[in-house]
Length: 158
Image (cartoon, rainbow, N blue to C red; front, side, top):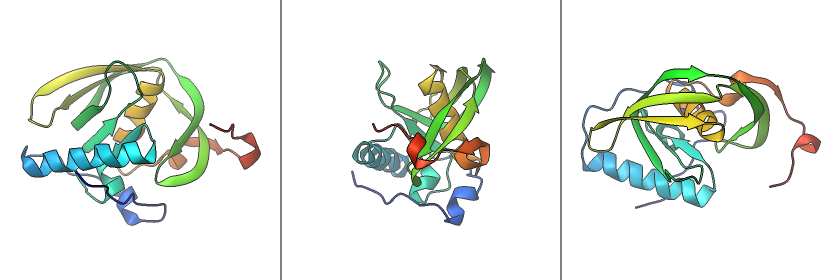
């Protein structure tokens, strides 16, 4: 495993549509392992392949629940309901937060690192993280969805 650099605001990589993964091989496994190490070091809850310079439909989410690290290859949101509105940030936009409305519940259909299909549900923070990371795969960043950006004095310390 290796740490990867996280692409920062202004890089055109963040606005590009990602291509589906067609080969489930050791290269994909290495990407997923590297992304997991990078996410852990950055202390984030999600990371998408374009954030590490790879235009493939791959993302990971870890909200610290029973599912632990969730690897999503070629993910698609197949159902959503409810709404939530709250502060959202991104590892590619350090120290920037915006108020973003997202679904409260989502169901995602994806593949694992071996190509096996699965479905996973997310509620609250997990639903927000799934939507945020899947947006990255479509070249959409949270600032484009934000109702407004938060001022530094509105941000609560972690």
